[in-house]
Length: 509
Image (cartoon, rainbow, N blue to C red; front, side):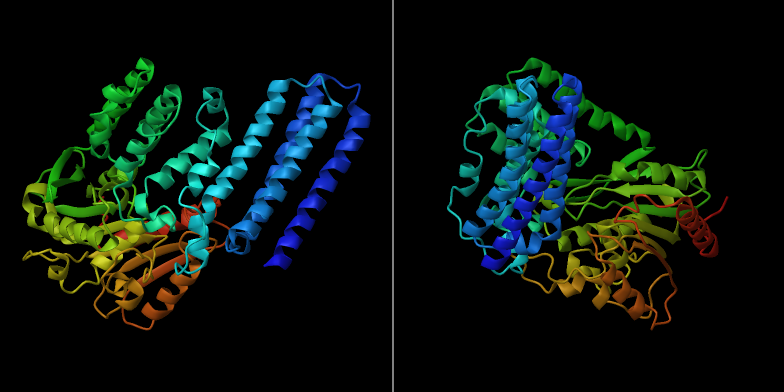
């Protein structure tokens, strides 16, 4: 590891020499240039060096974050100093540059690298295979953020806001804050609000982040998830303009659901109400049963809301299907695990069949469409033989009649790493393949960093050795969300979906 540290320092010094060499040339050629040109030169040099450091950390993250604290600190120090020295050099050579620009870049640099330091304990835990925790003091995070909450002017800096938001995410993890945060089984959304209120910070800073808590997260969680915090806003927030913005945001969260034809409760458990967001085709006659198209949203079983599927629901009703998007119990809201969310998915499917007559759907034509963790819920629902093991008792089947999967996690064994008392292979599709699965259409990106392409290949190879109907396509050069897909690939997915729907009796228009 010492050798790796030396390599990092040498690379950092090389970057420093490279940038400073460029700067010397620039200083000679631009000493008489306009102030605007000098400022632009500094901004570009700063941006380029930050990008280089980012790329270096990303490419070497396992080695960097698996170091012990002293070596890790040396690594981050060396990277940060290359950038700070660049800013100082411009400050000396171009005294005309506005001090605000220098202060801005200096602060952006500082909080960019503080965020690396905040990442250290959870990534150390991750890259140790969840077997070791970093040797840090109990007030490690507080020390990293020391002096960050007394100056409201810092709010203008993007990296400051990102750094504080991540710090709040860490605090929301409670006893798990020194662990890998992805699977923390606590009510993190409410914890996060309390962490803001409890900050030893200027009131204007707390007010800002409470406002951000609502206005940013409202796109990630259903509006009911904010009830606890919303009840406390008038007591905790002093800035009345922020109070109004929070109230408007909360109302927007309620109003956006008006796009659904109706919302019905499909399950109540432990005082939690879970809803089905239903979309009917135009002039839907419930006496003439139509296929059902169910949507399970993604979000790592931790975040997400049915509204993410509203556009897809509208597309489905235009093709004659009754579309329904569902709430689930999610880890960040309720502190639940994946098995709990699977239970809700099973309940959703049985509820649709139990209420087929009232919904005007054909109980023998239930298509389930999911993306990412939602695709996992869809697929695993088709594989579970005994829903009673998940607390679901119904005379109606919880198995879909057809499946469309996007970026599906096929092997989640070992992912649910905190306080799990059951074998996660029981909810991992790779281990549940049988001969009686419904027809499946699946898409996966070959550059998916969230769900490894290798998972898809293992599942594809295994299921192709059975008699199941499994149609799939994989795409090179795109990531988890198929971002940047060329038109021909988007057209292929559209065509394959249409053919799949027609073949299996779900496209009636």
